[in-house]
Length: 115
Image (tube, rainbow, N blue to C red; front, side, top):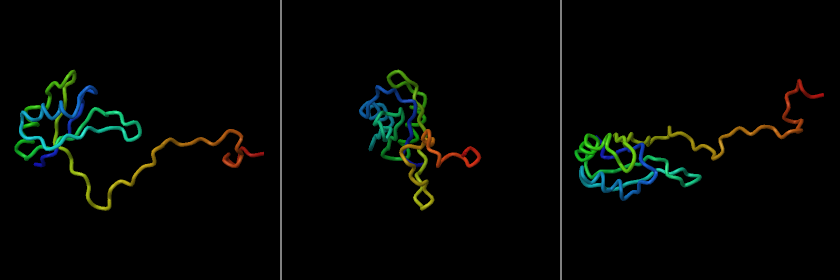
C-alpha cells in the first residue's frame, strides 16, 4: 500500500495545520497539500496527505475515515498513483466553454441560412 492519502469533504475553514494535527494521531505526516482551483486559488475541499510509511497510512484510513474535522465528516482513502507514461491526458485550455458566433457574423452561419 502506498503512503499517499486522498482526503475529501474537508471544511473550507480547515488549514494544512489542522490536517497535520489530525493525521499525526496515526503516525508521522510528511506533507499536506490542500487542492485549490488553478484559476481562482479557492480551496476545493480536498487534500493529499503523505504519511511516513504504509502502515501509518493504513492506520490513518482505518481511524480517520468518517472522522469529524471542524464541521464536516471527512473521507480518507488511498490516493491513486498518477500516470507516468506518455498517455497522460493533454492539458486542457482554461476556458472550455464553446464560443457562439458573433451576432451578425455571416461567415459562421450555416449555408442554408445565407441569402
